Length: 70
Image 1 (cartoon, helix red, strand yellow):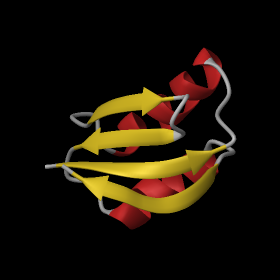
Image 2: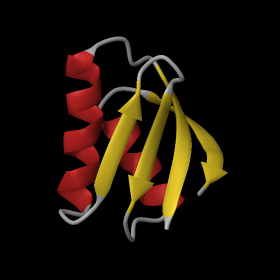
Image 3: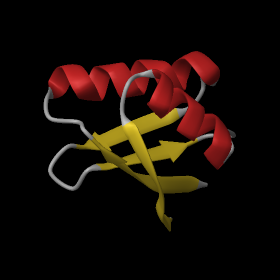
């Protein structure tokens, strides 16, 4: 199941890579899709919202909660 999260502070491809790398470090099987314009990160994997929050904040960005489940 894919879940979309709101993440603020991402402005470029480097930001997207940082967030993606932080999430996949916690779950190497997770599929991560960053939408810079919308300020969202979609994660398809087994990570909890808390684990995604920890990864996003560890990468230096603000986790603003769940945007939607797909």
